[in-house]
Picture 1 (tube, rainbow, N blue to C red):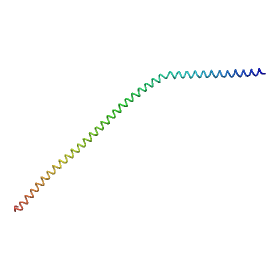
Picture 2 (cartoon, one colour):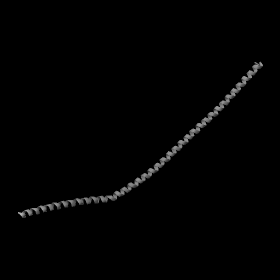
Picture 3 (cartoon, rainbow, N blue to C red):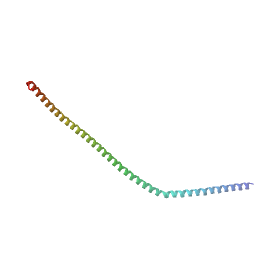
Picture 4 (cartoon, one colour):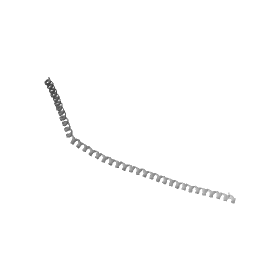
Length: 136
């Protein structure tokens, strides 16, 4: 009876060991699969590194282009500002010129008006003088 019991325990023990062995073999297979996947990933790393370098170089190139465009935009904005200032100066100069011409014209009209007045006053004076002398 004791032998049967011990025999049963040994059988159980062997089954347990078989189960453990099977589990270990399964784990070993899983680990091999994982290692294979990791190896594939490792092989991809240099390609990824190269791609990253290429992208980095492109990014740097785009940043340079961006800087150049920004410089160009700033230059164009400055040119526009300069042209706006030049136009404003020209407008001011033209207004001053126009004002000067108007003043000149006004002065000329005043002088003509004064000549007419003087002539008119002379005529009136002449008429008054004639009237006083009795000259009709």
